Length: 176
Image (cartoon, rainbow, N blue to C red; front, side, top):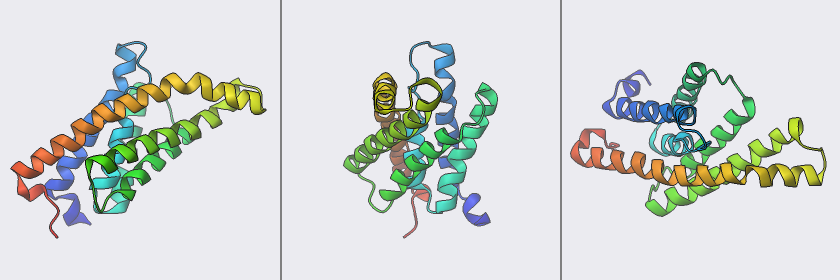
């Protein structure tokens, strides 16, 4: 595993993920764009690109934790669980990464993240009944919309730039 961590591929993937994690600060500087970050895209990207499954989870979760620390937003287990599910969506397409599979994984990941987090956030703010659940999901739709658009844009940037880097620097490609 140490050899893998020092590989060019691992270093480039990790740097791309760290840069993408920095987008979590955007809502602090540009109001009204909550959930318009690269977090979902970087989870799908990490899950699909790291050959070592453990690293596919550790690198994006570490980037998330570092950004949480600097943003002062604290740790929220439900958000991390949603994020882990998004990494799993990336792992699901790992063997055959195509634009269509990336799109499907991104939409599925965003919707699952939305369902998990909005159900959990139901408890502090909404009545604990079917009406409260419905209200929680309806109120969260703008966040889902922002996440879907952000995942499409940032996913295109992450997957597209890494694809171009692999073409320009074959050393970054997976040796089969």
